[in-house]
Length: 372
Image 1: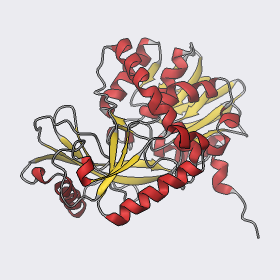
Image 2: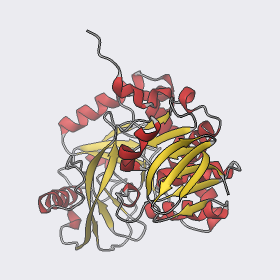
Image 3: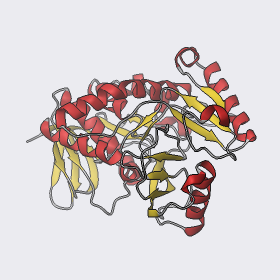
């Protein structure tokens, strides 16, 4: 059966858009790669986060704020449709500053961000707290932590449970999810688009490339931007421990099952997703500096994944000018933006308004001719 859309990519980004389109009554096929693909959806901290987003592009901070505000109803809707728990909490979050220099830079950045947007001056709430002020939010915080910025907007979920729920909800809405189906080629046809597979092909009236790092190869075939690159993040998880009422941080958070998830690394190492002992040692040292009580805790797993990054770190949303009906969606904040992708972005794609509503996120921004 010919579909309205096919989406290349079955991660959180692609599945959130598929969910939004299917919820609007569209026929959707999702073409997901096999397990040799680089899957950012399976290697992140699960934060739904506003802090630190959009310095230099306030519209991105506004979009992130809108998405986290929509997350409670988005999570509840998914749970009601599927019966699956997302382990979602939104009680605020803290972005730690390990020294006074970092604290000064953070406060300067946030004030500059709010100065660039009336909306953010009004609606983005944050406060810098020193270590003593943070202790009620982060019991056991180490004495070598200067402080951190607190915001009521932030939260976290289990990213694997989110992906599972999106798959389940999409199936219930009739989405045709084809796993282990890598796309070899994309092309325009007389009446739409064709994805050539290892065996056979799939056609639809319109197509969306949400393939993460796979966009480097596939997006240019439809006149879309390939301006993405991998950024490795390494992570550690501790053994399960008694739950403590602590707010999440980008550096470390306790999961619903009790383990402490430790991360926050950014490495330009190409497509190498291996772990390295020096970086794991650095992560462990930082974790003990933040929470000294973890010093004797056992580590049970270490892994790495590749984030999908653009040159400026902001999302890539665009419609092809040479192949109308083809769209490119790529970002490294797929968890935070999942509620927006399932609603505002899916509607913009459905109504073919992505180029007018989100023109500042087009790949054209990376190719502006320099003035002499």
